[in-house]
Image (tube, rainbow, N blue to C red):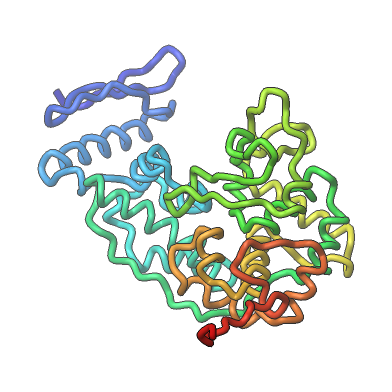
Length: 343
């Protein structure tokens, strides 16, 4: 039978009925009959379109996003997309709609790509894989390679000194290991060797586990291991797990405002950039940097090589930062091999 409206005792309208074999029995979430009537007509129309043309005709961004998150997708940057597209059909989201949304963001072009185009395409591609829409035909704008930003050792030490202990320990760990902030916040004691010598990251962005040794400063930055040996390692000032890194970036901005002229602007991802720059300066070993940092290709590390100067390596090592590459560039010389045959 067609969909019909039924008033509830609380005044909210309810929609019930069957269209093309699909059963509806749910609230319209409104007390205004005209609004409920529009919702009823919309549901009838979409149910008919789905029956005739298939799910691809009516799949919504909200539906695809919920499935994407349930499948373990990255939740970052999705809120602005949900606000912009919400229940809109995936088939109605094209290049123009995405470009218009990106143009409203007063940020760098690279940030627009990272926070608009990349997460949106992730959701749309998931929708295509699950039959909600066709493969998206949306192009990311080309972004030129900008200047590589990283902290000099003295700038990093200034931040470590200025931050409260629970945050300075986290920053030292990030600068020592190159971990993504989400990897560090999810790290548990069971994934750290008994003496704190080695760490294994099981859930990573690249999709494969990474394991690496910890230098002296990283080991010293670890909080005291609880008797249970369980739970996440890095916690906020209340001793609770961090809910996300946005709170950390906010605290960094507040600390910067309290120390104008004394601290270099920083955010969580800058510490990862800094580690990569330092690690290559000290080791000249791109394979090592790629493997420990969890990058998928050497090409992604090309932007760090120009900053890898001998004086930077000397300054990094002098502050006690350690790397497990093949050698310290310019600081440790490989012994020359004697090719002469013995007499």
